Image 1 (spheres, rainbow, N blue to C red):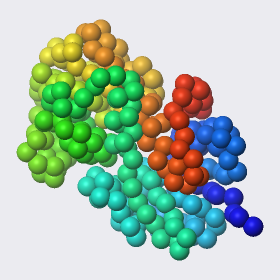
Image 2 (image 1 turned 60 degrees about the horizontal axis):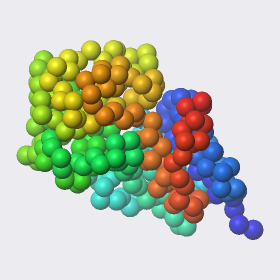
Image 3 (image 1 turned 135 degrees about the horizontal axis):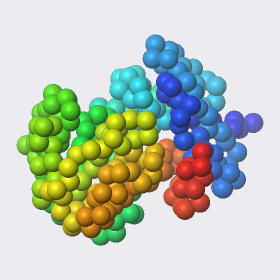
Length: 276
């Protein structure tokens, strides 16, 4: 008898994750006999859990904070993309239980921009990136590979931004946080990868005086969906793209690998995930 495929998302904590609603909608829509569950796993238990899951019928899982770097280190096979980003968000278990690691955050970021701002091209001009965490790493890699001519990064802790600059070469430069508004000057693409503006976090209070009305602006924050940053950018005439689509599009490759069907990102899916 063929096992019912199982997948899930591992994090700590995990109660806030919308991935179960996302994948659950696809499983129901396509009539697939499978399950996707949230798993709260403490940092010290990650390796034991990952080695056990294939024996329990799991075909793979998503990985979220704080496990992305550790999961990459534990993997038996690592994609070039995940290795360059330095973190994994999508794992596939093969028939022998080996762990294959990938990172689809950059895929999700680019697909969201292309969908939300038709005609957008990375090569149109330099990009400005706020923040230097895991999301920023994936986005910087995606922008560079898509042909972005230069990326300016600003982060409250300058050393974290300098690490990205050192790793990704001369097309990436750092701007002091005290003068963060300067990174917007002439930027064709502007991305907030920080938690500024997220519900329960510090407000987004950066000055946008240098932001061009021709820039495409996106925010990785999607709670709230329409952030103050996006509202202010739209008031300047910019095309704006909310962050929810990045979550939805990054999930597509994993679902296809685990359940054998390439899913579609639809308005119905957005509504389901927003209501979760």
